[in-house]
Image 1 (tube, helix red, strand yellow):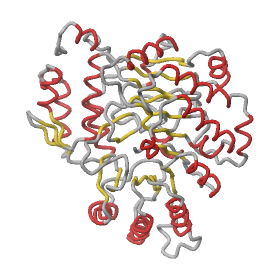
Image 2: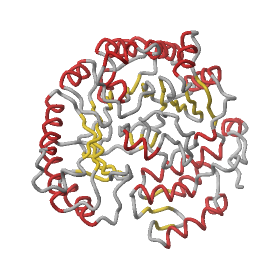
Image 3: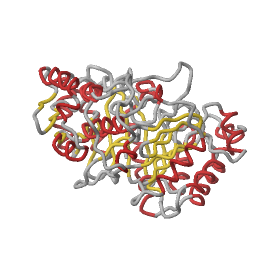
Image 4: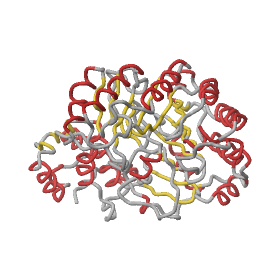
Length: 459
């Protein structure tokens, strides 16, 4: 599973589930995929929803004929750039015990026959928590939820731009983590032919050490400067070949994906990466078939955590400011640590705000998610599933799609949307066409409509 969680990515997305941004000065969790194609935005979240609503959403999710798979994301409100100079300090903070307490509360809500498919720990935890704290955290998770051995392949420790120590890597491996996520800045070393500081060699040594400890998957955000020169391409390709990194994304020093017009990188994309066994899955992510979360014959799906072979994933967010996504409902925990701790100590799920999607929202989310994972998005299948005529329901959007077609971004037919450029900028522009954040859904909630045997009407 591809899960960005570093400082560079956080600056690029600021944890928006759509284009909107939260208030300045608010530290939002770092483990979610950038807002491209996600729906809705934080401006849609209201304080009308609280812990009692969250409990109802979980109950509804448990009652589905085929309950969705579960992924646990643990956050602590620290920034991704936290370097853990004093690991014990995090353990001593008064809010620490509340995180494991919330895990226990969450475990009582979800049915025991719904095993966790994986766990993701944000950099503040993977780097900053003490050994004892990490032991207690993992013990709490395994006590609160059903864990199947095979799902440890999706236990991901995120380090952001921090360089993990050997001791910390060994401990996390013992605790069951099988994946490491790093953001590495090679923007200067790859441009320097001589690499006098040996940065590339140190990165290679770190990655080989992680591999030697038995981790099954490595995911990298590589920060490279623009324009990327030939010597830099050679160094990067040699690094990837030696370390067999399963997942890699290239971003520039500003935190954005490298432009598709960067000719040297185009060579890397079309030739070298392909020769090394990488395939482009969109949004400038490249993966090999060795990646446990993305099988060679498995269809891809989209969730707030990015690309995955798990369909209909439910995300349980734990910690201050954590975001949960349960089918048609999203929620966010209290941001302030004091408020978060007080609620958890009282045995209350610390949901501070949330939103329930209506049928128009769900339809648009389905389209955006489908576009992100499918080069050929099937319009006809969507029409049959939702009972709409695409060109009529999305009449205003059709004009915007034609504009993108004229720009060479896609080909539009009666039956499909064929995306020609799978870079982030182009996919974001396409998803933005269907983002209806400024409007209120004009159709009744999907669940009510289905109970009445209705289809989604055109606008």
